[in-house]
Image (cartoon, rainbow, N blue to C red; front, side):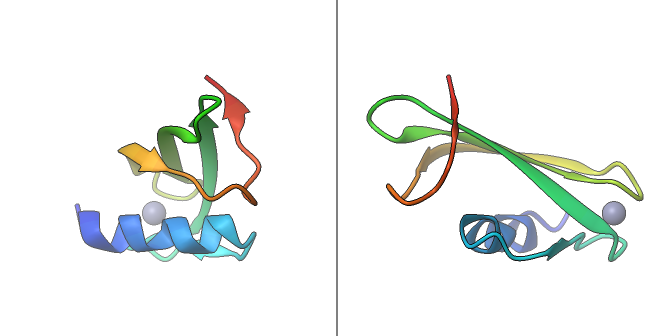
Amino acid sequence: MKVNEWIKLLDKAYMNKPMFCPECGGEVTARMFADDDRFGFAILECSKCNSQQQISRVKFPKSVNTEKL
Ligand SMILES: [Zn+2]
C-alpha cells in the first residue's frame, strides 16, 4: 500500500476534486467523519480494486463537509 499517496488524496477530497487510486488508477471515494472540534478520520476506497485506506487523527478544515462521529 502506498500510504503516503493515499494521504495526499485527502487534499483533493477537501476540494471535491476527483481522486484516483494509487494502486490501480480507479476512482476513489472518501467518507470523512469528524466531531464538533473537527477531529476525526477518513476512509478512502477505490471502486475498481476495492483498496481501502483509513486515515486516523485528522483535523479537518472548517470548510470541509464531514459526517458526524
Ligand atoms: Zn484501485
